[in-house]
Amino acid sequence: MGKPVYRYPDFVKEVSLKSAEGKRYWLKLQIDENKEESIVVILKNPSRAKKDVSDKTVYNVSNYIFRNRENYSQLRNIGNIVILNLFPNYETYSSQLKSLGDHLMDPENIRTLDEFCGTHTKVIMAWGNSPKGLFDEYELLKSQTMNILSKNRNELFYVDKMSLMGNPKHGQIWGYNDKLIQIC
Figure 1 (cartoon, rainbow, N blue to C red):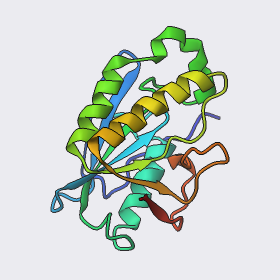
Figure 2: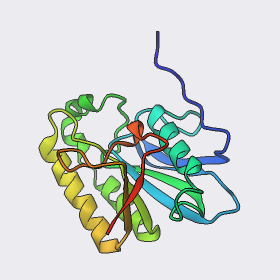
Figure 3: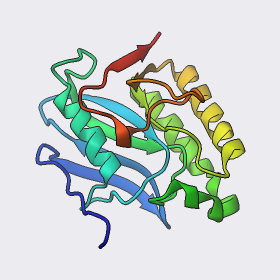
Figure 4: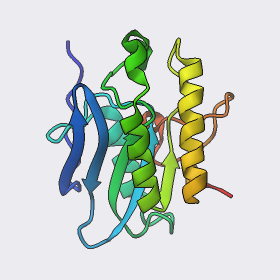
């Protein structure tokens, strides 16, 4: 039996993305054409979501934001969700990222993070803990990302809790009733 296929929820009106050679740099979901605000969600790495098919994480994140727009003033005017990642490499099982070696550190992805965080105010951090065997690389990418967020003075959020290792809960395991927490 293969992996389940996730379609985008009916409320997703339009999907656009930038991808190249096994990588996805950004994914944008329009969820309400009457609202102009966007929110950036930074995850670990893309699984399978493309223009015509979602994946479990993107499905879960988009549903969480859409369902909670009336519960949190910070989400009330969100019309677009922008999905970014610490690693741009498509890989459903993050533990397999280690096999990519030197191809993991991608300056184009850092530029993408900087560009979107520089043009969007609200950011939900949702990358979870480091993939097996990539602790140092992960810590470097987290540090670069946090520097970008600090430089751009983004409004930062996470959902539910931080892990024992100090990482925000991964978007794939958010519950719809989990709290959206703003970092002061």
